[in-house]
Image 1 (cartoon, rainbow, N blue to C red):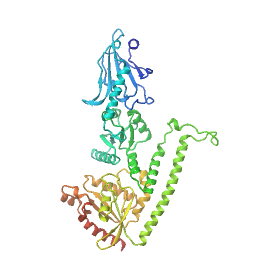
Image 2 (cartoon, rainbow, N blue to C red):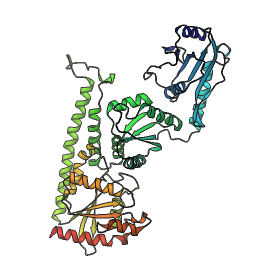
Image 3 (cartoon, helix red, strand yellow):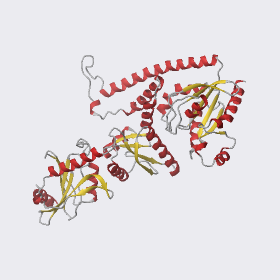
Length: 507
């Protein structure tokens, strides 16, 4: 076979390649140029055993070169079993054959190795035996690995047109979001561009670098900081052969895990369906078949249309249920009103310490973790001021920049509670270097929710995590009160000011 391949290649003065399946079947014959060959799309041929694709490439080289960088890129990107390059002599006969293969570990930044060059006629070991030995190495590596196969191992990618500092802050927040969703972050990639690639978000070269990094780190997921459309997700997935999600999907997944109440679960499901609806793709063959049977003769409905109709029907039912829950919540609020109990609502950026503050003030033990969106379901507790005045203290879901529109709409029923508040307590994580930007995000969302006219008391929290408290006091000035939700003594001024403001609003 090698002799015939070399003779044809020599006559055409072009590289010739064969993609050979492990069964021995030739999957593709490739005719290239003098310098290279272009491997066709292999999307229909999935990898075998989770690591290698089950195909090997044997191709000719006419200029006396060994395995080129382009060859190695093909080996890495396509996860080929083997890649062999046969040098064609001037008389059209084969000379040495050079072969490279992937290895499980990374040595000196490379996760490939070479076999000893050999004339094709003198190769002792069969390709099948060599591939079986490589597969055993991968299998052994997976057995001894401590990696939890169920855990997502991700590379985070941000492509931004924002200034570098803002782009870095946003990427740091994506790391925290990933950590909140129990994703192991292996690496982060930040690329600033004047214009985002409409198809792949990144340039092909950068995406190729990310794919090599994913192979080296054994990553199984790419998380993009930008919202991706269905076409972009499909293009990046086809290029990298990795799962791809965006920031919105990540936040929705966090909400799905954290929602405990019936209302919270309804709201999350509604948000997920609204996100999914425009992303149903008619390009999936499974969705393009017509249904049959009695009542469905003639044009009928496509599977895609049926899926869309079912989602819309489910959204209508969810909306109806949420309205009922909203009425129940309104009745509970009306009951509190009849008791003349003022309401303090805690608002602020996610992970600002709102739940910890509520626990400290009311001796409660609601979940308060150092994670983004640890609290989704609103929680209310009674709080007694030093003067014996009683109020209702309510903890709400935290805000975040670029909060998905689907979530804002779905959580409107929860955020309605804020409109009943006599005082909004804006909790700020003053230990975060970006607390000013976080405050701006919260203020903007409050304006969008028509809550800007309510009295607001700013509480600069987590001062216990700051090295120079005096500097914080100078920065904050008279804007609000500097406290630590972990130190009850520091909350005395807050209680006095909150009581005074409530007294004014009720006068």
